[in-house]
Image (cartoon, rainbow, N blue to C red; front, side, top):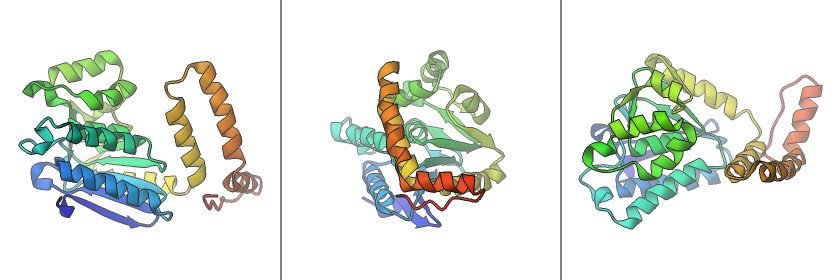
Length: 256
């Protein structure tokens, strides 16, 4: 495992993971996925980090998926299971997650992006699932593609193996928004600044509840969420938020 494959920093209440293989279009190796999982654990344990940002080094690519020619493509179950675990870990991460798409996002990179809560891309970014072009199929990432993109549009992208623009990606539901490339950093930081001002415990309970109820029948989901609102309403942050609203001031959330 090369620790330079991914960079991890935490400052100003934000944990940041950068895929650092710019020359290889920020493709992922098996060791890189293991390191990714470790850094997610670090970010979750860091009480001072209230949000997580994921991006790629440079401006060419966010992540181009698995590194071709490495053990990632050997077909071993452990490699595929570790990637599946990574996607699940990001998707259920208890803190808000932002993907800053600074270039091409392909194959397994699509899975990482879709697992994040918010995905913002520069206008020049391109998105695609080219697996069909080499006789493969976007298996694990399909679970998230079909949760975000209407079936017909998803199948067109998957079957043709062509890339789509950032504007098309917004229309499809692949990403949250797109901004001019020179404004990407500023726009992402603005979103992160808003996220870290919210209640950490309220977000944690809310994200966990939404993930659990996603596949429930409507009646079961409503019953479950009626219990979860009681849980979140009983927190100190909820009491502080209501007081701050009544007193016309900003709340001071502590995560309790």
